[in-house]
Length: 342
Length: 213
Image 1 (tube, helix red, strand yellow):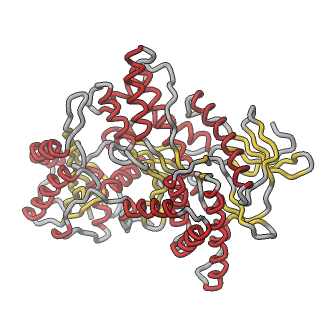
Image 2 (tube, one colour; image 1 turned 180 degrees about the vertical axis):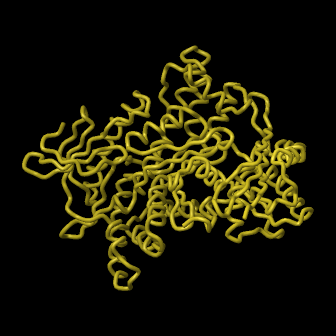
Image 3 (cartoon, rainbow over the protein chains, first blue to last red; image 1 turned 30 degrees about the vertical axis):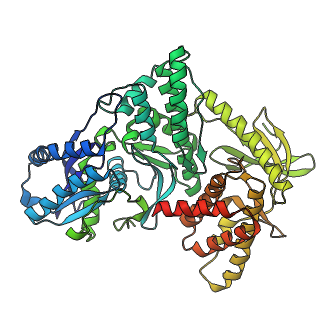
């Protein structure tokens, strides 16, 4: 039997709707459509919850229409409607969840609320074929080193303050870099022509990391040293990437050593940074291991990952009742019971 | 190259050898460079960590904690020579146990020793930085609790840093030894008793636990 799920995602500035099918017999996963619309703000600014929610409300119906059209299915074919329950920004989450709820009532289909982080992990595993990797989940709102054990994705290390992507995004604002397609992408491009390495604080505590002090420090020296011509914006981007990615690779490696795994999977928006992937690959190579990563279609927030993770849960009998279909800004990865894995 | 060295472990950051040092059997810890890191960052981190590790090992020993004795530090080659401790890791000891009642008193004793060791370490303002059950040994034949691998340790008087230390250990306990909540609770109890300024540390730890909910 074939199951079809539609997934709605809008926990941050990306609005995504995707449709996926699972074949029960062959286990094959097929992506029917993956439509995304991003709320991009002018350089020097970030995205605010209220404006982002307004963006999602404005674009959700056309995106939904496109997703259905591209998948070439009728409403009758859909088995389940999946949506992001959290974590994320409250207003954008709620604006998308209300659409999911409405569709559920309108089409008379069950709902499945999905943990955003689990969506990333399951999508990454599906696309790359990684079996039981240590997962580095890095995005604008999350930074976690995760490994699976006994029905849960357990968090081995995480940021003690802001997310790595938040650190990059906010530094891009200081330099007035473009937010299109993403501030992290602009930093990655600028870093390529950076030459001088500027020493920054390096903050690893056990398997945890901290970025807020590094951000304060680089903001401060950016003001002084750019004005005096001691360094270029490119040097700062380069040094920031080298430092914070080294911290991430170090903690990931420590988790791999701790649990004795040789596979590492990078997911989340920052995961499409090629320099991070390259550094991770060098680490894995030194250990005789392997790195798995995906490109922007699946790394960056999308509806497919919500549909896919939701469908995995749905096929084990999980649904979310209308009363339980609220969103939550705080929803840790290890709260989810992973019924679909051994 | 180290003379007559036998590689026993390739860790994430260092190679550990057993080698004779003068007349004694020694653990030789050689930090190696990481190709993924920028050379300047790599050099700085490696040198800083070798020095810090040796200093912290020594500081802890002076405050009464059982740690390997430092024999020699070779800064040029990022290598520390230290005492070889005979014994088993707490991780292995816990793994060999079943949920049997008979282990309860043994675990209480172990928790007591761990709590005492952590208290001693924090009294000396040493933050371990990577407390896991693999970094705690039970010395043969005395059963003295030895704290090893000060590779990420540093000196700090901040209650927050000490709380992070405990938090890291708690997480290591929870993620590798299911149902170990009671054991960790009794570790904290001893810690509280033996370390008279532990109040702010425990408060910070509890704050962190609340943040997670």
